[in-house]
Image (cartoon, rainbow, N blue to C red; front, side):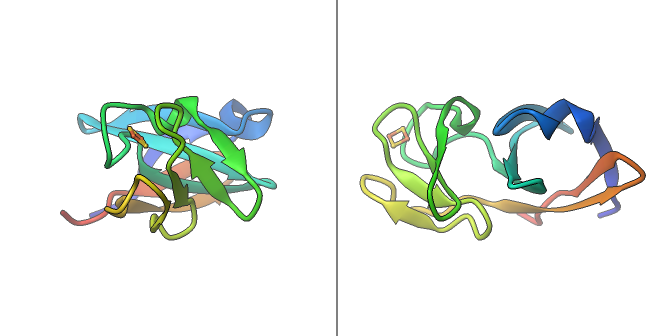
Length: 105
Ligand code: FES
């Protein structure tokens, strides 16, 4: 898979999360102290968008529905009721542009 231009960095600069769609896949971008990460946007526990959640200490995203948590850097399910990990997508930022390489499924 090649790199896809998904957004200008300025779109996430003042935000914690940014929902995007890449080839029909719903993805959440995260701004962790200026560094950008990406996971699937749908919580693995239910029908909730992680882009509506809040970033917690230690780089966790808290789902807005039942407050389960995932590690933003690895996609690992960290807090109940979430047990299934998220897919993570590779990110690079070059020349003020965010590029994403989708995870293999
Ligand atoms: Fe996300 Fe239940 S839907 S924790």
